[in-house]
Length: 469
Ligand code: URP
Ligand code: ZN
View (spheres, helix red, strand yellow):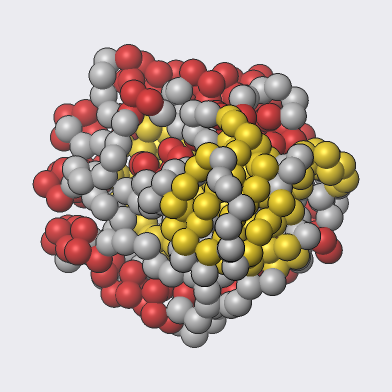
């Protein structure tokens, strides 16, 4: 199958030019101006931007913890994700109680994703059940095509929590095996104390979620993770950075020459903690995520950090948590499951709020939503840019579209959208996944199960140009 995309305004991670993209089979084979010749498909992209399919390196499809046969908001809901312009996700593979890291990875590939996923994907190992055997399992992650492992410093007294000693040992094992350590950097002890204080004072409403998880709790967690990673000499990736306090720690570490990378999420850039203040429990509970939403000054600091290269990626932290699940915490905010859906809206929100409003350039947009996540996770240059030899994962974007985000236009498999009613400046019109058109006129026309597992190269083997991110 040969395809040519004609007269596109092509946005790559470091360039913008008008030209054509030649595709043979699943790969990009030429960029430039090409004479007419027989192609199986000719796509006229006059007046459209064409950029690489998004890479979202922080998602939780199929629930945060595997729970036996139950599958909530599974990989079949990635139809909405690819319709929103993201062609690859890097999903977390949680452990079931008593199950190891490797079994959990195999389970996710064979039972959850196979036959369902509409996007290509790779996985992060994720510790959600600490047991002695996980340390040795780290050695086998590279053979499984997994290049990263996540430790939760938060969530004290839950099976997710990783204490400092465990994190240190995971870091040592990861260093030996070329694995990047990802951290959820909040001080779990402090959160626990502050939550108890709120409840003792009778404060049970969702807005106390942010009160009990203030920025200094995240700043301290980030500082500690950076300190320990520096002792070990392992590359560190700080997940979902929300505030100036954490940015300051990452800036200082990078300044000392340490290999530290950081991401923030769409919601931390575009929604303030005021969203938690609604009198309507359901409305407020949609915005319960950890770390918590912040005041405007932190949102501004995050945009600055993205431009400065202190933060390197924008992700969704997509969690398929329904309103019914959120109601578990109607009388106690600490019981509201954390997380919200957002993988389908990341590209529209970041273009509309970031590029269209002049906060980031078009090239920085491409780097943050596609190229850097692919590099950090060892799937570049197969994924993450418009480049000869790379997979033909391509978004054709109509910059003239004006509208608002509506759940019904791209249902995400959950019963709400936290960006409902937000302004849309521009829209993903069509998407190609490995050379095949799977989204047309903003509607999914592909197949469930079309996505493939993409093995990630571990840190030592991957292209990591930290200085360029
Ligand atoms: O609130 C969130 N982010 N839930 C998902 C788990 C995590 O911390 O990434
Ligand atoms: Zn997450």
